[in-house]
Length: 111
Image (tube, rainbow, N blue to C red):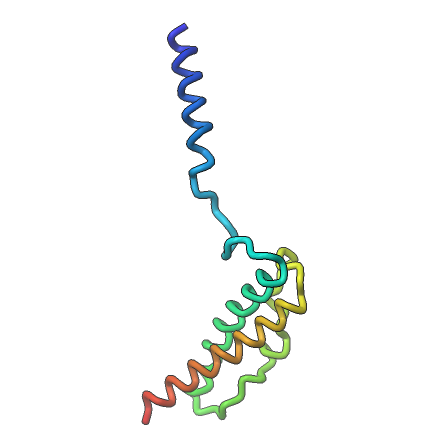
């Protein structure tokens, strides 16, 4: 009987503690639909644009963020984002920002 009581006590404590355990989430807290899609696109685009801006400047290519990646703004799109248009807009905005930041930063360092 004591074992059954301990088991019930343990189960109760476990059930009360479970909701406080952090469950793995997507990259973001769930934002409302369109904002979530835009933010995911912006982050993906910023990362890609930043990488391309560094590369272009390092290899003495002219400033031009309108690359194939920029124009194919939905290549990282996943169905969980739902709003493809908002994702694409976020991607392009983020790509341009990341590219300009990286290319410009390296331009200031070399001078």
